Length: 178
Image (cartoon, rainbow, N blue to C red; front, side):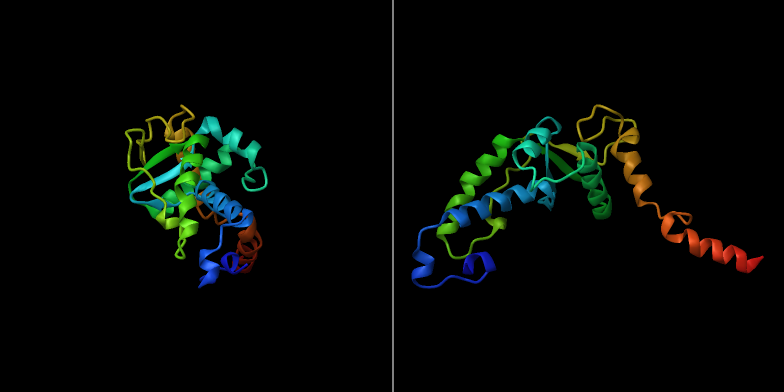
C-alpha cells in the first residue's frame, strides 16, 4: 500500500518480496512511458505504426486513443511545444518487454524510479525531427510531412479567432462597433 502511495518503505517492508500489484504497477508505468511519450536524452520513444494496433488490442484500457493518427498528432503537438530537434525512436512490443525485464530489479531497491530505466541510445533507427516539409513524415505513414503530421500540427496549434470558443465574443464585438 505504501509503495502505491509513493511512501518510502523502511525496515522489513523494504525487504519484503514484490507482490503482484507492484509488478503490475511497474508494467503499466513503463507502458505509460510509450503511451504518453516524453523526451529523454534528445530522444522520444513512440510506438511503431505497425505495432500500435497490436498494443491497443493488448491494453485497450491503458491505450485509449481514438486512432493511430490521433496518437501521432499528439506526439507532434508535444514536439512542437518543445521546439527543439530530437530523434524519434519507433519502438515495438518486444522493446517494451525488454524494458520491463530490466526494470524488475528496481523494486528490490527502496528508491524505485522509472528514470532508472536505461533507454538505449540511438541505435541507427532514429528519425530526425522535424523533417523537411517535403520529406517523409517521421510517423512512418510514408506521406510527406507537410501532408501528414506537419499539416495537422499547424492546424491544431493555430488559435483561430472564429473558432467556437470565440464566435460569440467576436460577433458581439462586431455588433458593438456597428
